[in-house]
Length: 275
Length: 284
Image (cartoon, rainbow over all chains, first blue to last red; front, side):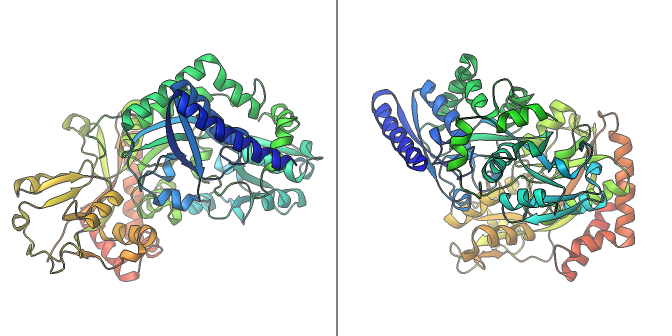
């Protein structure tokens, strides 16, 4: 029933979008990879980042339609407008504008009952002695971790990681914070208090709107998104969206500083253009 | 740690309950990239520009140059981590705006003034070859190893690349990153490019496997090396000392065989031996 409601919400949103488009502004097609709770066709307003995109678009007089495709197809398509972490897309596509709109963080989770004292992780060396669960293929510098005595156990799904935590097969697991929250809620709704989270404050990554070079007037489009973002931040609408996912007053510390920094980095142009 | 916040969030109703019931069991196609930089809050960082397969989060060890540099940093007891970024201008941002201890990559094209505050340490010397697209030139490109024979042609150049020789030969220069250049080559928008063979092979295998064999090496007797450097910043309080320790550790790795061992993890033995000889040459 709830899933039906979600589908209906999406359909209504799409219809509203089309109506708004004809009445208020230009339609822009954007593409994302299904990755809840940030982007999802089955979530209200397309998830947290989707809701931000729609709020920005409304301010900018645009209607943004989000289409979902497998990540591989998004990366390979070098003529589309992408949504997500630019690092995934920029090798294969040159964009006319990159507008960071949000930030995501990584946390370490553990099952409290298995440990007498709270675990503290500030450096790689602090992981030594623990069995650390990660999603398969996500460890980049394995040798560097091994030199610090860190041992990883890989799993194919997030659900498996958290089940292993509870069973004690691993001690810690590394996961994107909001994704970790949702997996715990899904799998262990009666044991939410049993899990602990350690936020990795240095883990911020950008979520952006990337405007393809072959879009109509792409630089202007990027500017409209930037201005729309500025306005929803000023009006407080942006923060309300974040608080519906992070809870009131608990948006990660430094969120807006990081967002501003990503905006500077992706628009830094000291030298000749990349293209 | 923010325990109270975490618990409070997990208890949220009705939105989170609503979301939780709709989210598939396997949430999302991608997980976090687990790199040293996740744990680098109080550490200096070396910012590196993505150059497959030399610097890349998609390659084991973070890429050939990253793995070698990581090992040299550990051996030299230099407490920094390497962070990979997609664009050169982002790496330059950290150097110029945040006084990074070092950056890593190639084709940076620093001004003379900037160059005085930098210490270049070559980490990998990759043989660079010229390529053309078979479909555009079925009979080959009769260049005979001399750029003068390419007058009027279009060369695909990376941002920051020194194009003096191409300009002097009357060759038009078109800019782009490697993947973009390969596509331009295929579509006939440019005539030839100069790229390390390992990069071309990696990108074709990953993004256009059906094109294997269609990007043809323009054979010559000798060719240039594409050198990937770690470039230390004298303006950073620890930059000079770190450069010295890094160079010393790297030299030792080259001499004791550990450099070669890392290379062998990424390429066949014969090729690895060739790479070793080239870095030995550039270390002199």
